[in-house]
Every structure is written in structure tokens, then in C-alpha cells.
Amino acid sequence: MVELLQRDPFRTIFKYFKYYGMWTDVTVRHRTFSIIAFLVLNLSCCILIILSLFKSSNIEEFTRCTIYGSLHLISLSCNINFNIKKNAIRDFIDDLNQVMNDDPEVMNDFAENGLRKCNRMFNFTFHISYIIIGAGTIIEPLVVGKVSIPMLVLNKPDIFYISWIFQMISSFYTIYMMVFNVELFGNLLIMFHTYIEYFGHNLRNLKATNKEELVRCVKIHWNIMRLMEKNENIVHTTFAAFGFFGMTMLCSIAFLLSTKSISDSRNLAIFIHYGGREFILTAQVFRACYFAQQIQSSSEKFIVDLYANDWTTSDHKYKKMMLIFNENLQQPITMRIFKTFNVNLETFQSVLIIIHANSGIEYSDNTDSPMANPLLLIPLISKQFIFSK
Image (cartoon, rainbow, N blue to C red; front, side, top):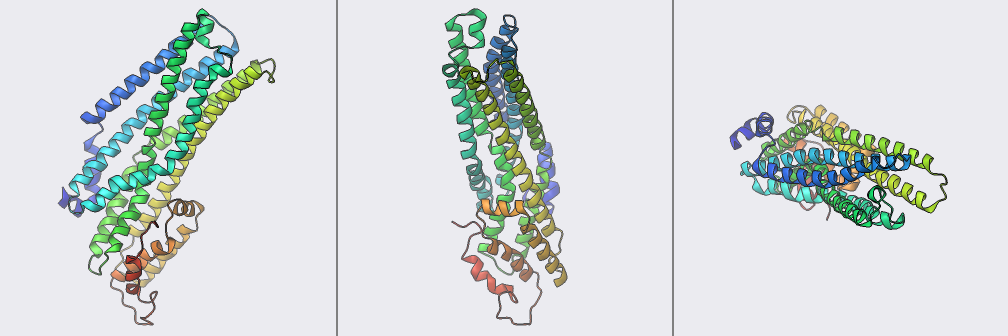
């Protein structure tokens, strides 16, 4: 496996990922339990909601039924999709880490540290968002005067409290699942992050003779980026976010129109709760999807530009490559990425200079200048990290 990876990393990794599949024992058990638990909790709420339709034809109640039912169905479908993709990617990274025994230190950083750093970036925002959502579900009965759909059905408080408990459990389980599954976005971000980390690791102990190692690390990570093109989760999640947003806004408008007076505190509280909750969820999901897409496209373009060059030909190609690199740096999304990860731009730009130095091109003019003789930059680079502490 290691020989195949070194000889033809793209084809080997692609075949490995393609035929590896998504159905290992661990992922099947975890995913099946998650889906069944989530399905039971949400169906319990949905059944109680559907029962209310036989007792009430009020547009207000119908709107609430639509919101609850759609919320559960979309959440369930997203969680199924998240679990499948997340577990497949995680298993792939773990197995890739095992077979890459020629450089375990770097791959451990790839599989562990990178994922943890990427997740930290999103976890705070998602935790806050879903705490708001969960708190809204719990506080809702208190705000609206303890009036719920099941209570309207049988007019018995015990049924209401049972429904409230189901809603709380479902809400907290949704919070747990969505925050847990935010690692999917971390796996998209890790492609860009790990490339820099992996590259930086080689630069710290750079020698003029290990050009092949640099080429190999770029090839492997570029090929992993190619694999991520197969991940359609961003498209599905963006579609679900827009569908979720549209459904919620339509229901909220219908509910608002059904209220006789917007100044009524109860109606206003319900409207703000449902509209605000779904708006926050939609905004956060869409923001994460958009950001992950931009990082993927920007980093892939940069890696492709690097990989497409020979590094051993003329000085003209090197200058052209540097020009492309500088153009990429000027893009707003690229600057945002570097700013987010706190990347030292000067150090990272020196990567290409050192690559050029390893290409064998000799400089004869002003060899005392680091820019004229990039080999002089190596001691400077070795004292820095790509990611500032």
C-alpha cells in the first residue's frame, strides 16, 4: 500500500476510497442507533402534532404543525446525510493514517491536530446557536402561557407535559447531533489546513536533497482535495437550508397574518420564537456551507497551480507561479482564510522561494541577498511555524 501511494498517490487513494465504501461495522452501528433514536423522538412529536389536525382547523395551529413536522423531517434527513459522510471521511483518514507508516508523525497531525483546530473555529458559533434553539423550545410553553397542540387535542395537562418532555429531548438531541456533526465542515476545512501543516512540517527540517518529499506531500494533499469533490454534502445542505428558510418564512407569514393583533404578547412571542429559531439555524448552516465551499475552491486552485508546475524548468515558470500565488492572496476570501487561521503570510510565501531553491536553479547576482539566493531563507524559516502560536 505504501509503495502504491508513493508511486501513484492519486489513483491509489481514489480506488481505496471508492471501494472502501461507507459500511463498516462501527459506522453502521453508530449511524443505525442515531437514526432510530432520532426517528423515534421526532415521530413521537409528529404523531401528537398530526392528531391535533383532527381537532383544530385554525390556521395558527396548522402553521405550527407545518413548522414542527418540517423541522423534524429536514433535521432527520440532514443528520442521516451528515452521519454517512462524516463517518466515511473519518474512517478513510484513520486508515490512511495507518498505511502511511513511513511518516506517522505528520499523518497523526493530519488526523488529530488539524481536525481539532478546524472544529474549534466553528464550535463556538454552533454551540451558541443551538443553545438559543434549545432554550427557545424549553421556554416556549412558559412564554406562551402553557398552551400547546396536544393540550388543545385532549385538554389534559398531563398530555401537554408529555409532549413538552418529548420536545425537550428531541431538541437537546438535535443540538448534540448537529454540534457533533459539525466535524463534517471541519473535514472540509482540514484539507486546506493540513496542507499548510504538512508542508510546514517538511520546511522545518528542510534540506536541499528532499525535494521528492515536498513533491510527494503536495501530490497527496492535492489528491485528497480531488477526493473531496465527490462530497456532495455541501450542495445538499445548502439546498436544505434554503428549503428550511423558505418553509419557515412562509409559515411565519401565514401565522402572522392569522393573528388579529401583532401587539398581543403571546402571538408576538410565538412568532419571534419560531421565526428567530429557524432563521438562526438557516443562517449558521448556510454560512458554514458557503465558507467551506470558498475554502475548498481557493485552496484547491492554489494546490493545482503548484502541482501543475514542473519546478525544474525555467525561471520564467517560477515567476509565473509566484504571480499566480500573489493574485490568489489578493482575493478577499483567501485573505479571510489566512486571517482566520492566523497564517504568517511572509513565511508561507517563502515556501515557493524554497521550492524554487530546490529546483536546482542557480543565482549568480548578489548571492548575499535572501531573495537572490533563497537558500539563505532556510535558517529563517526553520525558526518559524506556519501557524503562529
